[in-house]
Image 1 (cartoon, helix red, strand yellow):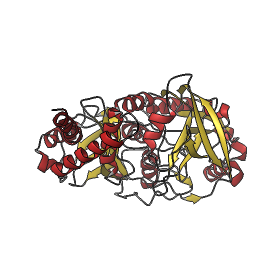
Image 2 (tube, one colour):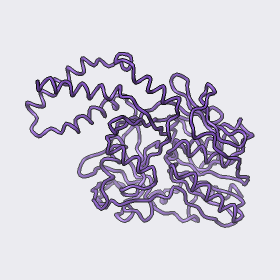
Image 3 (tube, rainbow, N blue to C red):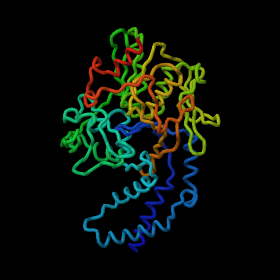
Image 4 (cartoon, helix red, strand yellow):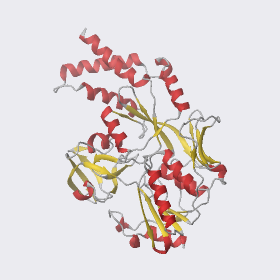
Length: 443
């Protein structure tokens, strides 16, 4: 009877991962990876179709031979019972099976979240979390995880972490190649006041750090009026709160008499699609490109179009039906001063949507280096036990129809950041050669 119950448990583990009915959230972002992940509500059309698909029988839902898998797991579990030296943690084993299933897709952006990791991820999109205050990115080919940005006044800055540091170990465990969301949500984030030990590769040597976690509030938008009435707006990521902060910044700068504008998207890994759509709409006119901002398309050639018409941001499925209750949204605004957008190799996903809009509309100049090249969309799908999966579901395209995935957006004016500036946490405007180039182009 005990063996029969265990068999039922493992079968339930596998089938549950495949056919649990769900309602969901979607991610467009986090290209190379970031410690703060954005999300938007999945459209009703897609949600209904997903629930319908999830109710299919096992053979329709998956090509996996469940009988063969069940047999092999039973064998492995028998061997573990008999020979494994330590106590089993069935909860971790179950999570490992789910992660293995997602890892088998061979897609660095599709992953499984435990209930705890999912909850932490949701909290982080609100702009607050218990962590270290650093932005991390991962090379999809090598698996190397690098510090892209250290936020001022954060635990990371206080501990001596620097941009460009490569994370080698966390708590004495090597992490190269570990799925980035797993590293961030289950190893780096934690309870307030606890410490995380980290070993980083800096140059040719290793540096051991101990960082105390605390609540980190990340301002996603920072701005100032520079000389000659040049407005400067830094957007570090596209979160739920970002459009409000962005519009507030531009309104203030316009009130101060802004005559030209620099928007800094360097090292911005993306985030929430709805956020970048609203921000691009606020900048751009609606009488070009048919008002198109971005559109998505899945493997069945189904998708959604985001566009401006009649001073409203609208979203429809490509069959013309409305798909999201958040739309239409009021817009009717545009920025009519010369604009430069700063980009680099860590500007990704939602950042590339924004840069692609500016380029296709011919509404500004892109300055810096070619962007990362992530033109695919992930849906975040909560499961009924509090866990979730993130799954790559579609491509997105710029207003002109350009598929940037694997290519990136090229700048109009190419200029590398000077080498000695790449490891600095804070760069003064007058020494930032890319920023100064953008200003000179506008002048």
